[in-house]
Image 1 (cartoon, rainbow, N blue to C red):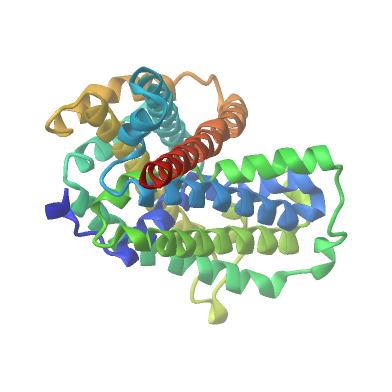
Image 2: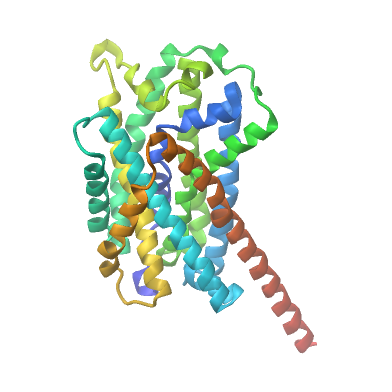
Length: 370
C-alpha cells in the first residue's frame, strides 16, 4: 500500500467536497424548511455539525488503521464474521445510495430538460458513465474529483451571491419556528445528505500522509457545509418558507430568478443544471466506487474493474423501484435517516471498541513490565 500513497491532503479535501455536494442540492432548502420553517438555517447548521461528528469519527478510526479501510479493520475490531456481516450492510447501503442518486438525476433531467426522453434512458446513461469511470485506479479517481471541484463551487457561489439582491431578511425570522421533534427530523435529513463523506475511509490508505486526513476532513466538511448553509439562507431570504413548501426544487428556482448584472444572462438555471449534473456524477462516482472497491476487499479479489458492470443491473433495478418522484423523496429521506446508524453509529461503536482494546493492551503491557 505504501507504494501507492499518492493522494495529497488537498486532493482528499476536494474528493470530500465534490462527493458531498451532489443530488441533495436541489431539494435541500425544502427539506430544511419542512423541518424548521424559518429556522431552517439553524436546522441545516445542526445537521452539518452532526455530519461533521460522524466524519471525524470515521477519520480518527482511519488514522488509527492507516493501511486499511473500514471493510478490513472492522473485521479486526469486532471479529471476522460479525465484521463481514456489518461490511455487507455498509456495502448494500451504498448500493442504495448509488441507485437513489441515479434515479433522482433521471427525474430532474426528464422534468426540467429532456421531457420526451424516457426516465429509464437517463438513469441508464448516468449509471453507464459511472461504471466506465470506476474502472480506473484510485489516483485517477482523485484527479477527476480535483478537476471538477472548481466547476461545481464557482457557479453555485456566484448564483447565491447575485440572488441576495432580491433577499428579504424578514423571511429569516423567527430563528426557531417549529417544534423540537420536527427540527430534529430535519436535522437528521440534512445530516444524511453528507453521507458520501464516508468515502474518506477508502481514501486514507492511499494518502501520502494519513495523519493529515483530519485536516482534509475539516476543510471538506467546512466548505461543503458552508455552501449548503448559504444555499438555504439565500433561498429562504428570496422566496420565504411558505413559497418554498410549494416548490419541489427550490435551488433550481433560485437559479431561474437570478440574473447577472447588465443582463448578461437573465436566467442562470441552464448553467446551474449543467453544474448540478457534474455534481451528481461526482457523488454517484464516489458511492459506486466505494461499493465495488469494498466488494473487492471483502471478497479478496485482485482487481475491482470486473465488478463495475456486474453490479450495474442491481443498481439500475433498485433505482427504478420507486413508483414516482413523491415516493422517491420519501424513500430518500427514510433511507438517509436510517443510514445514519451505518455511517455514524457503526463507526462510533468501532472507535469505542478500538480505544477500549488499546487501553486494555497498554494496561496488560504495563503489568508485565512491572
